[in-house]
Structures are given as structure tokens and as C-alpha cells.
Image 1 (cartoon, rainbow, N blue to C red):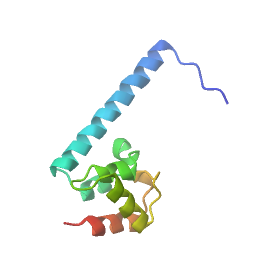
Image 2: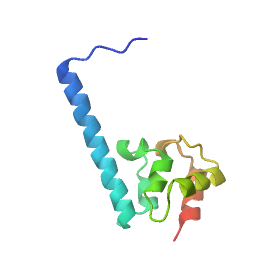
Image 3: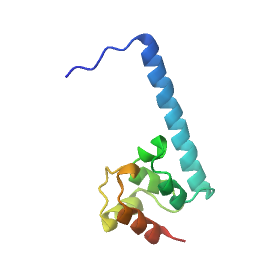
Amino acid sequence: MALPELTDEQKREALKKAQEVRSKRAQIRAELKKGNMSLEEVLANAEDEVIGKMRVAYLLESLPRIGKVRARQIMEEIGIDENRRVQGLGVRQKEALLNKLAK
């Protein structure tokens, strides 16, 4: 199936939207890193387009003291696929993440 041909205007709109999403995602990650936002708040807003489409690994790596290796270990321990997005997490997986990372 071929991709639809986009006009220049449609391409500009798509690029603009993609940039806005990246900016919002970076802002959320920065807030998590600073401690101004909690994992619980993020998971509660999983229906938000920007948060919902973020990969869980990327989200965990945004938390203080968690890097790529630790994020993968946590996900494996809980049983979350490495490609899972936040909107695809089940209730039990969210609870397990919050219990594991509770301060």
C-alpha cells in the first residue's frame, strides 16, 4: 500500500505537529527529571496523546537515578514489553510500576 501524496501545506502541518509533540514530550521528561511531576501523575494522564504514545522505557529513563539498563530491568521484572507505550499499560502493570518506584 503506497503512502498518500501530501501537498506542501500538509507536509508543513505534519512537521509542525510533530515538533509540538516532541517539545511537549521533552517538557514532561524535564519535569520528571526535576521531580516537579511524579510517575503517578504521568500514568494517570495516559489518555493524553503525548503521554499515551510515549514508550514506557523512555518514560522510566526520565526518572531520576534510572538509566537505560535499570529501566529495562524494571520492565522485564514486571513483564512489560520493551516496545510498550504508556497507553498500552494494563492496570496491574501501572500498579506494579508505582509500587516498584514508590519513594
